[in-house]
Amino acid sequence: MSDTRRLFFALPIPPKTQRALVKWRADQFSAEAGRPIAAANLHITLAFLGDISEQKSQALQNMAARIKQPAFSLDLDDAGHWPGAGVVWLGTRRAPRGLLQLAELLRSQAARSGCYQSPLPFHPHVTLLRGATKAVSLPPSGFHWPIDFEYFALYSSEFRRGRTRYEQIAAWPLITPKKTSENTEY
Image (cartoon, rainbow, N blue to C red; front, side, top):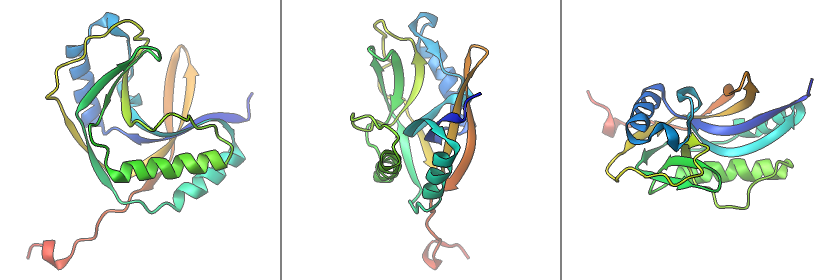
């Protein structure tokens, strides 16, 4: 039995949007395009941590609890295919500053804690299909799913019975703006 767990920080996709994405994916891509990701596993990875000890996990959770990042919205309005990685993804044409700042904070803290971080630039995306190593026809532009993010979470990744399952371990709120008398109805 291992004393490490495979962990990552991510933004969960709300269930209603998960269902819409799964239906859209089924309408847009053939079964031969790749292996679909389970609806419950749809997310935007902020920082991959790898296999880490409980002690390092706790230190990173303590760091995450100190983050005071404003909530943000994004629009999933872009799609792409990375044939080398075998991934078909949905992303955003304009990543909000809050998303980029949150990912940078988490990635830099993870790196300082000894968790390898890819040298590639952060590209926020939701993986739709894996094993997509052959050419995939992407849907025409014009689709979009707006999402308001109010928290980020730490997940564990386990491979059991031939399937990958993600389990949320902890979550931290993003700061929502306070209402003022100017935007309060009487």
